[in-house]
Amino acid sequence: AQSVTQLDSQVPVFEEAPVELRCNYSSSVSVYLFWYVQYPNQGLQLLLKYLSGSTLVKGINGFEAEFNKSQTSFHLRKPSVHISDTAEYFCAVSGPGAGSYQLTFGKGTKLSVIP
Amino acid sequence: GAVVSQHPSRVICKSGTSVKIECRSLDFQATTMFWYRQFPKQSLMLMATSNEGSKATYEQGVEKDKFLINHASLTLSTLTVTSAHPEDSSFYICSAGLGGGTEAFFGQGTRLTVV
Image (spheres, rainbow over the protein chains, first blue to last red):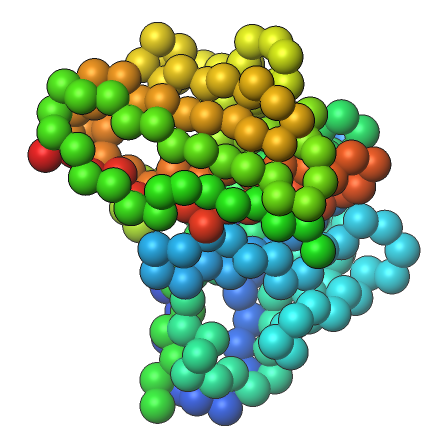
């Protein structure tokens, strides 16, 4: 079984400051890792994903994440946030093969960017 | 990228009535689609896996007679909430996988309010 823990339910940060949203996972098999963003009353938009290869993954909107297998983490970072980054962020995990489309989500982190 | 369209985006219905939500893959065929439910300020919970041409697979605790899933074609899955009650009010999101890929694509979600 897989699980995802997002350590912070809410993260307030001032505009143009850096931010890190933390995500830890557990799985008995190799995993695929994802970060999604959700704006109010909307679906999910993929920010970035880790499948294999380089552990530093760059995504859209200036976000990046680093896969750390020894710490089972996949933290999301952005060096300078904008007001428009205010949203809910979800970390998710899936497995290879037939289960790769079935995601297990963390509880989400609400990022609030303060002007 | 692949597009998944969900309709309606918002619906209000009376208690005791049934509501149908559609999930369409617009530019690809999806043999498997997934239905998630999101409670306010919480994460997405997988309800069921919809398989084209066969019965859906429900997660533990999900009432299959209340949440009817039909996947009649390779581009359409429907979720029908039968005899809806206020506790069924929630945000429902579908996703579909592009065959051979590793990423699931999400619909825009449906906000169901039962009054």
